[in-house]
Length: 130
Image (cartoon, rainbow, N blue to C red; front, side, top):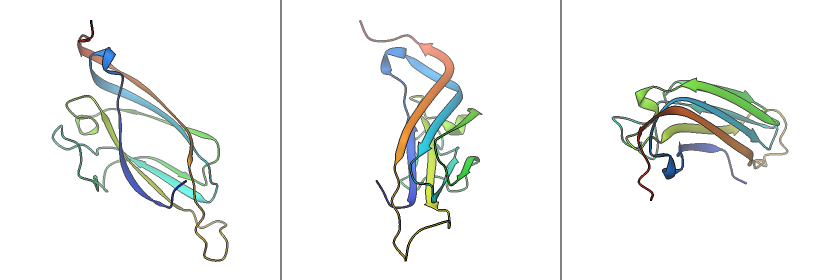
């Protein structure tokens, strides 16, 4: 469980794939706490490098789920700003109270119930595994 806040996260594929240049991402997730809002922004990678700890707060919003209960899915086409030189896709997750519910100044905690990621793309280099 966690208190509300912002996180910059990377989605990485198994190294056995080789070097993947992502072209499309399908992200499904559930947030287990109905009194929160989840926003997801893309474009968190700059110049092929991992972001600073604060990320890019003005990145394109790809999801805005208020009071999420159960699984929600978003799909998007990748741009160069979405992934770094290792093919990791960088996203910014923001979880904030939705203003519905709550009790007497106590901030409810939340947690991700499930996170599923499907990546599509072109493999540019074969696996280095024997």
